[in-house]
Length: 112
Length: 114
View 1 (tube, one colour):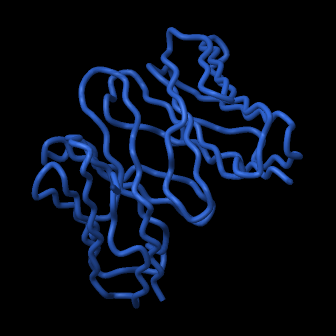
View 2: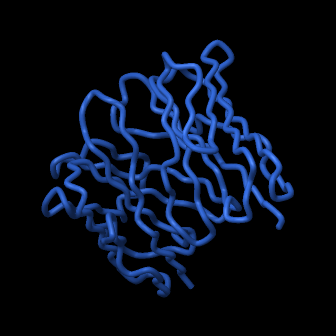
View 3: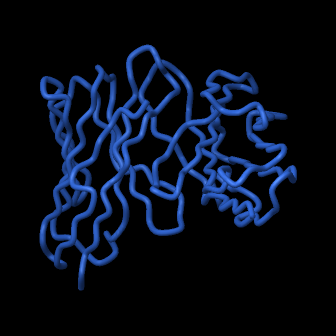
C-alpha cells in the first residue's frame, strides 16, 4: 500500500524562487528519504532524515520532519531550470529494513 | 563508471513473449531491488535480494521471476507478457544492515508490450 503522499502534484515556478514540496505518511517510520527523477532517468537520492531528526540541510535543500503530524517538507532555495524534475518522498517503516515505500511524486517545473 | 546499469534500455515485444532484463551494480552493495513505475509515475517495489537470497516478494504475478547469480547481479525474467506489464522497470541497490542507507537506481528499462 502507498505510504507517502506528496503535495502538490505539480508545481511551476520561476528561476530564483523557492520551491516547497510536502509529504505526508500514515504509519510510523524510522527514516524518510527524498529522491529526484529527471525525465527519462532513474531516481537519484537527495537526502535522508531519521525519525529522531527535525531538520536537515544539503546545499540548497532543506528537509524538515514532523513525526507528530507524520509529514515532511522539502525546500529548494534559489531554484534553477536544472531543478526541473519529479520529486518523491520514500519512507522506511520500522521492522522493514529493506523496503522503501514511495509516494506519487511532485512534478516541479522551473521556468527560466 | 556506471554504478547501477540495466540492459536493455528499451524493450518492445508482443503479448505472450518471454523477456529478460539484466541489472548489475559495481558499488559493492549486497542488497538489490526491482521496482515497477507505471504511466502515472507510481513506483512500486517488486522484489529484493540480499546476498542472493530473496527477502521481499510483493504481490507480483508468478510470471515474474527474479534471479540473482551473485550479489552484484539481479535479473528479471517475465513470462507470457501482457499489455499491463508495459511500464518502466528500475533496478536499485543499497547497503545492508540495521542502519540507514539510500538506494541507488539504474537508468530504467522501458518495456512496451503490444
